[in-house]
Image (cartoon, rainbow, N blue to C red; front, side, top):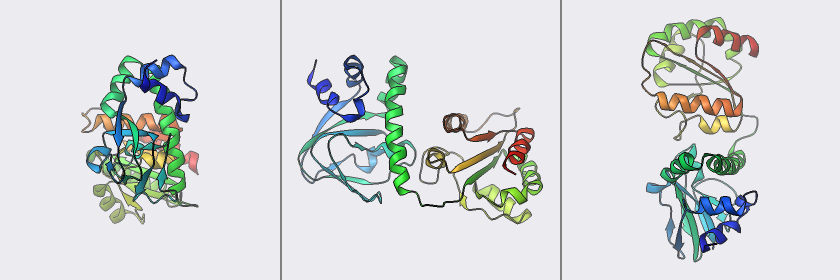
Amino acid sequence: MDQKTELLLKLDIFRDFYTEEVELISEYFSIHKFFDLQVILPKTSQDSCFGIILTGEVSVIGDQIENSSRTQGDLLGEMSFVQGRQADFIAASDGAIAIMTFDDIEKLKFQQPHLAVKLISKVTRNLVNKLRKKVQQNTPEIIVLLADDDLFSDLINLVKDHLHIIKNFSIYTIDKLKTFLEKTTDLTISEVIEPNFLILGETAIGSRILLDQVKAIVYLRNGTTIESNPASIEALARLCDLQQVLFSTNLLTANAVFQYLE
């Protein structure tokens, strides 16, 4: 057994892993020493990797979580899975960190898919727990309203038909739709999201879905046209499947969703 595997086996995140599994996963991690007051995972790299502290202590600056100190076994940078750059990490002592890039995660998914799922599940669970500490209590449930450009009018008519239901929720949509909806209905839009960054980014809804704040997503799509951001939509659909969020892509199912919510 090599030293890298021995270090990873000491961490709580790998408690449910067999030694042989950690040996395989260790090939995708790189070990880096850090020194007191050194910047770890600077913001320029946070969006492309995450780390697990092996030894030492790290201060977290700017993530608005009460406990701003991280020690052995704690994760750094996993917030970038859903929210992009959020904090600075400054070493509070000498130590070491195991880093896995998102490219290495993709390689692990291709070569050892069952281990990738197991590891990502652990990281996601840690991420959700961290996000729950940040979320405000009694936050209204969210409905996300989206549509292809040629289906804007269909979405507006749909909203008008179910306005008495929709007004009970916090509404998220893209900027272009916000203008149409607020002009043609009495609906107030709570937040604008970027159409090309539905999962990642500070204005994305990925973290809201993980926190079970999203009640339903309606995205009216024209099945005869090519989507401008198919990967983002596929990721959104998968996340909804994972969290059991209502996800509708046509008028028939959208009507059914709102009837269910009534």
